[in-house]
Image (cartoon, rainbow, N blue to C red; front, side, top):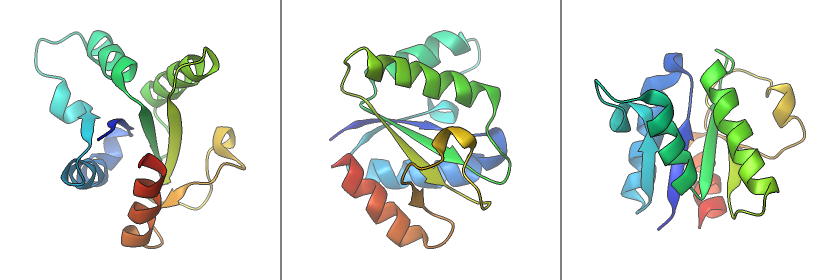
Length: 127
């Protein structure tokens, strides 16, 4: 069982929820904003808590691009990684054709081409 933070753009919420539900069904503890941030919560504080506990950041990108929040999430995770924490960034393509420049050259799980195969690749990276 791993702790997984799913980072996504608002436009991709339904796909991110599908992915998070599948990760949870596979036995992982999943942090997803729509599940973890409630009315009245301090957004930054809740995100920070989720990121601090995560062993994996699943960074979902799509034709919609990456939202400013996503940049904060992956940069925070990268800083933790560079400071010696056992955390890994796992890129996932939900739709679109090209990865953001920051992910160029990084292997990603392709859920757009074949959801089941892409999910299997992602699970292998987590387990």
